[in-house]
Image 1: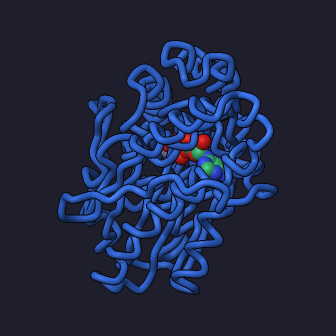
Image 2: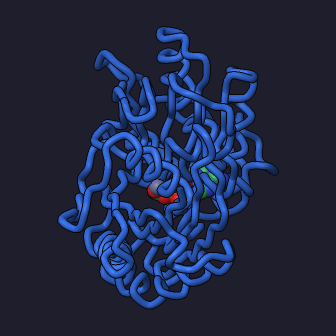
Length: 335
Ligand code: KG4
Ligand code: ZN
């Protein structure tokens, strides 16, 4: 069975053809077009994102089919991200994909973006099977999920304020690095001393596996204000490395607690922030061979992970059909 999946939940327009092979998946093509219009605004502008999706979606889908050497008639299932994400952007992908399904008289399924991120782990380690623990760390989400079965999830914890990616992006903005700042902080940190300044690592009183990043961001803002512009510019790589260290240490401490309590066979780390080199180093040291990092091409938003999740969803629950809408606030465990 082959699915043509589309992802337009935020600022990447992506299409992919994925084939089901036994219990697993083979990615036949993946095209990702990142929007650059947002850079000068320091964050994603929803209205501009939706328009940019409209401009390129046809070309992105066409190229995904060409790269897979397939025509529309060779596709058995159509899929798109239905949420969470920006409403108008989601609508572009869902309606485009539903229309193709309608014209080709084929089934359509809407996919939860966060479940898509979990499925990037299967694409990255083909013999991975449930159960496992998953840490979803992206620009909009920080969640710990127990993957009990292919489509059975238990939400164990989440951020109480900013997402980990937001901590990188907002911190980076304060340091004058532009958007998105995660990759820039990562690159600067390689030449920096992470012990240069100790930013406070959050301690959360609430029982469970929760994260909080807003205090850290405030600590950075205060530090920048106290030290002054010249000092910050001179020591940018040290400050970036110290700030990144606090984010990574906080993620590790909460995840380690969940991992020790539940003792899962594997821990999957997925989402854009899973690209972070310090996070990979620290988690690799802590969890050894039991940690599975999403491959770089499946970390940031992409339609291949949506395609894999769609194939399994269709196999287990059948099609959603043409009545599916978009769900901007969809929770992680809702299929
Ligand atoms: O998963 P993703 O592409 O989009 C969302 O679903 O949010 O994640 C994007 C986020 C951004 O916040 C970006 O700054 C962050 O991932 N990011 C990184 C790195 N590369 C991307 N954060 C830290 N280190 C990186 N190397
Ligand atoms: Zn995402």
